[in-house]
Picture 1 (tube, rainbow, N blue to C red):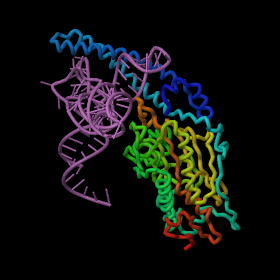
Picture 2 (cartoon, rainbow, N blue to C red; picture 1 turned 135 degrees about the horizontal axis):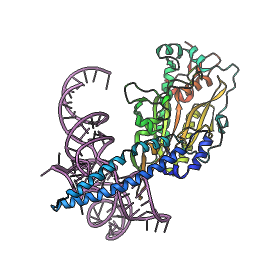
Picture 3 (tube, rainbow, N blue to C red; picture 1 turned 90 degrees about the horizontal axis):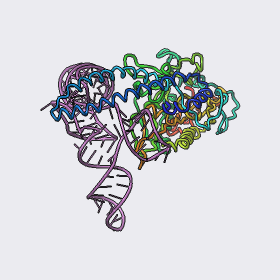
Picture 4 (spheres, rainbow, N blue to C red; picture 1 turned 45 degrees about the vertical axis):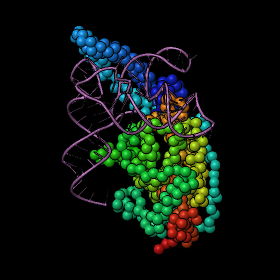
Length: 425
RNA sequence: GGAGAGAUGGCCGAGUCGGCUGAAGGCGCUCGCCUGCUAAGCGAGUAACGGGAGAAAUCUCGUUCGAGGGUUCGAAUCCCUCUCUCUCCGCCA
């Protein structure tokens, strides 16, 4: 969320921001409530001040053995007046808070202006799209033919948008997870964490999934627990309500977790294959950094994610999300899109974002500068490094051979026990 | 599931016959002194959040001792509810 003071003093900029982001949000209610909160608060504080002073007198009188009963009688009246006035405040604060919570983050000034994903400029492209003498296949056909993906039985087990991996397919998924974790921990300096796959309301609110995106989440019935839609949630919340010291920063974490998404509102989209599942695996990168470092850290984080694609020799491009396509909490986002020959298009495989202090404020993640008093909010960043299921899709489609087998990328062979090909049984 | 203990500042840890305790003491940290350097030592400072004043340094007020409610003129201290943590027993990956 944005800072109350900032919203109060930048209403016009925020209206413009909402406009370019494509939000329809009325701020007049905010203004009225903010005014009212401050008015009520100052009269209340005045009364409290009086009470505190008189209470000191009473204490002194009692100590001196004097009779304070006449003042106490007066204070009874004042006290009940304070209690009466206090009642109105929490409701106002709560509504004001709710209003502030649905205002999206301010985009970074380098974010391109645009309406939707068609306006996202390509920042760079890497790799060569393979020329083959045969027709590319979509991964679900490749996977089913090889007997490594079984969507029919998965539907029996759980329904649509679930997958059953089998044999070399299951192993390939596991190999990718290990491969990604190894690169990021051993070469990029991230600390591996394995967090809970369910979190409470406070954590979901801290990273911005709640209250706005409740319908995208799976909730555990009868518990204050939600299945995580991304490791960003538990990992960013590791430091919720903490004050870090400057020397701790930057903090780099990498986590493998499954991710659970209801995909409400995407009926009929990507119904075939692994692309859009209720449950999928992801390796996530999360950073906590000083404000002045965050833009450089976003570039670095993006490169770290790209490195996985390069090691796997998968062609991809990087796009910069335009204002209209930017996520709610993000100040800036790069999407990595991998080439999928079976479908003849680039497909998102990673999303790397800087959130400036937007998440940190909600989650109250601060740090203290060396030699300075007071606290400052950290900046948080995260990015997929990478979506594992989609990486497997890219491998199947990009490494398909004419005979229907799939070659194992060089970098993965050690993780596949030296296997060279996945061939039809 | 049964029995008990606890939750205080960046950390550790005092604080219940309610009233200069926003909170002793220690550690850590910051600044200064001392020292050939380091260590040690000495001195001072060091909570967050919100409101108001000020160009700023800063000043001032309010709130906060797990959360919420209650008693009271006044609550870290008394009462109730909840959450979490720990120990023991039972059960189970």
